[in-house]
Length: 149
Image (cartoon, one colour):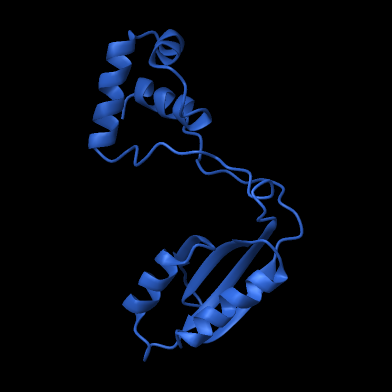
């Protein structure tokens, strides 16, 4: 990937609504050349989507929780993945090493929301065991690792 492509991705990561002309001024290309590079980056999968960075607390979801899950494999891992993908509280799901199967990041309005989420997992009989950690505060949270240019 070229340096200009990395710069374009960094600029879009900071503000996905940035105009093509604004990006072009910064990287030294015309708006049409920037547009073509963005189309190419999307086509090659380097850019998956353009999104909004919403403030969860302002949206009424101030509680961030991490849930470590060991699966009950009799329930079926594919069914677990489908349920997690569809659950509105789940922000992230990672297959991890060690004694746990998956690590989930969820957001809820309150502690009752965490209990409801765990109850959903138990009702579907996916979980052999779990461990829950509530984030007291967030020091740093990014949706993108800035690339060196």
